[in-house]
Amino acid sequence: MKDLVVVLTGASSGIGRAAALALAAEGATVIGVARRAGLLEEVAGEAAGVPGRIVPMAADVTEAEQALQVAAAVEARFGPAEVLIYSAGVYHPGPVAEAAMERLGELVSVNLAGAYFWSRAFLPGMIRRGRGHLIFVSSLAGKFPLGTIAPYCGTKSGLIAFANGLRMEVRPLGIAVTTVCPRVVETPLVAGHRDDLVAHLTRDFGVSRPEATARQLVWAVRHRPREVVDAGWAKPAMALASAWPGLVDWFYAYKRSAWARRSASRSRPGEDGA
Ligand SMILES: NC(=O)c1ccc[n+]([C@@H]2O[C@H](COP(=O)([O-])OP(=O)(O)OC[C@H]3O[C@@H](n4cnc5c(N)ncnc54)[C@H](OP(=O)(O)O)[C@@H]3O)[C@@H](O)[C@H]2O)c1
Image 1 (tube, rainbow, N blue to C red):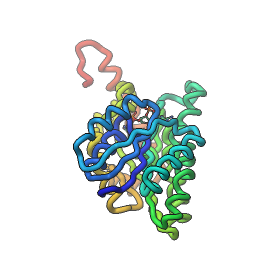
Image 2 (cartoon, helix red, strand yellow; image 1 turned 90 degrees about the horizontal axis):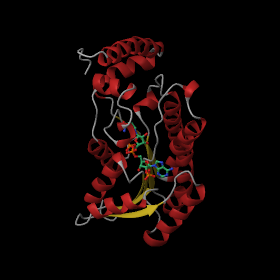
Image 3 (cartoon, protein in one colour; image 1 turned 90 degrees about the vertical axis):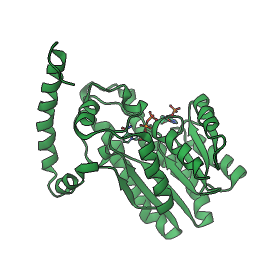
Image 4 (tube, helix red, strand yellow; image 1 turned 60 degrees about the vertical axis):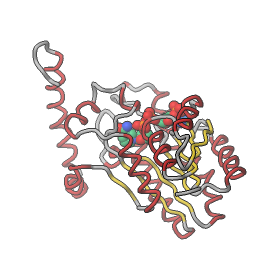
């Protein structure tokens, strides 16, 4: 990957941060994008001494103009980006009827509209070069929507649909499109939500590490697959569920009551729900 120019949104934290370090370790020049410039500088510093490097470029992914500015700055300094990894994302769980309107809007603008803007900004350079690769970090939640995280799931399913349509459009131009669907990963995104769905999913299905998803992203950059799904042991269940979608509704209703019992017993002193 020596000298490969990779633009990576969400590089200040979690999966994006681990992927920036892993790609730089492989020799790539990683343009790290996020709003928190201080954290980007920190991760760039951590990469000192590895074969590649991390170049911070602070930007808000929801601002279309900033996507165009970063694309122009990257091109002027390094030539057209060869890979765009869109990992920026937010997660706001809870029942739709109680959700704050601005949070619903933020889910769509960061997780979905931003992916449109950044693809639009970087595709022309890739098309001119006749080669490129767009990688979107979606989620298992985009494959299997669940109650209490429906708006998040909608953005992640939307991202998969966007990627699948876009692939048809750009593959003849030499550009690959990959979706990566991790299960629950131990990052700040979910750290504040230990008591809801994530906690139950983690307990029942295990949790992954950002470094593991970063390795999948490095693999994806090398092999340009259509998708990477980190379903673990749930893979056969996924095949069954796509043949019989009502099964997931039933499974969710069944698990929901088990989770409610577990939460209730945890809140009673002397009974261990952990
Ligand atoms: N953790 C999980 O369990 C899990 C599972 C499946 C999929 N995913 C997906 O993986 C991706 C990365 O999540 P993570 O777990 O690594 O979360 P994280 O640690 O919270 O990182 C989120 C990243 O997104 C960036 N971001 C958010 N809003 C932004 C904005 N408006 N402009 C620019 N950057 C913005 C943040 O940077 P700044 O705040 O500095 O801007 C941060 O770098 C997300 O798309 C998430 O949906 C996560």
